[in-house]
Length: 411
Ligand code: F6P
Image (tube, rainbow, N blue to C red; front, side, top):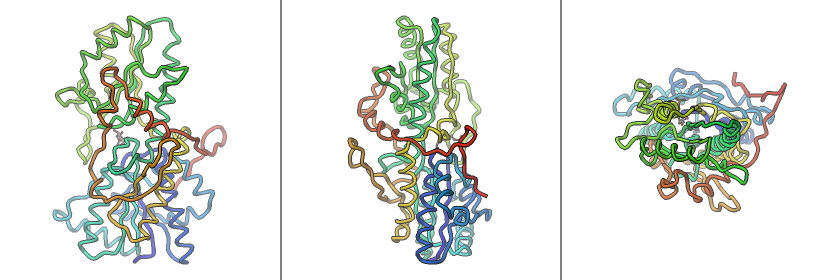
């Protein structure tokens, strides 16, 4: 087996994807120190950059505890990311021959890829090719995605921090929405694609001082525009300010995304995912023209996935642990798998790392159980809140200088 490690990041970033990178690097460097040889390479912009030979010696840059600690609290993907689908091996075998030649040249024994369901497709394909061609390189996926839509894991690193940001900002927006003695509607758009895990987190804003959003819509159930207008109208008879939280991926009964009603020319990525954006402004415009209401659309956009200053401590530590668990699994001989988080108790919260077969994970999408969505009251159930609450707890040990956070930059 090769003596070196290689790690890449792929898909949409999160506030803690670099904590997983730090976890991979720390565990791999500990192994390298104990064996006396090897390094940790980082591929820049995932498999896309790797195929162009873009590789850095990450081990040399992360050889102090301070560097690891700073990377752990740095948002976005320090190595750069990509949305790249490998072709089927039967269609373009030369792509795989080229990748495996490069891996051999670098004397790679363990290949770690930090990503979501689309990125796990890369691990699956490389593992399958390697297994069919007698390679002993171990391919292990490390989960990440704010969308929390990966199968076989209780939740994904990245979700808790984004959920915490959403709950916090929602509570602050609800506070702000009450200041004027006039009617207004605020529609807040939350990421998550076809899964409502993130949008549901808006309900975590509720506590003894705050009622939470008035209406909350997830993409798992069809969105009825007429019913929505009626509900907002009815609420406005009772109170001045109405605050609505919606998922970017809410769809009409006919399958069209709500954002498509006003934005018909959005880009589509290689996985066939349409860029989802604009549902809140679409609904604001509808409310304005139908009810004459003063409306404001707030799109949380990329802020919800890069807010490391508000990352959940539990999430940071789990992301780090998942990275280290990926290295441990690879060194133990596992390949074609992804690290999973297994919750054994919610109160007290107890969660451990395990692994699961990549073939049950790649390209699959885990959505919110319908039983956790209260469509009658346009909200989520207690089960949802009990599931999500422990994931947003704890503080992130951000390093501050001159009033702003310090970040680790890969050279
Ligand atoms: O997959 C994570 C995610 O943040 C989704 O919630 C969102 O729809 C998408 O990525 C946006 O991706 P991009 O930044 O590539 O447009």
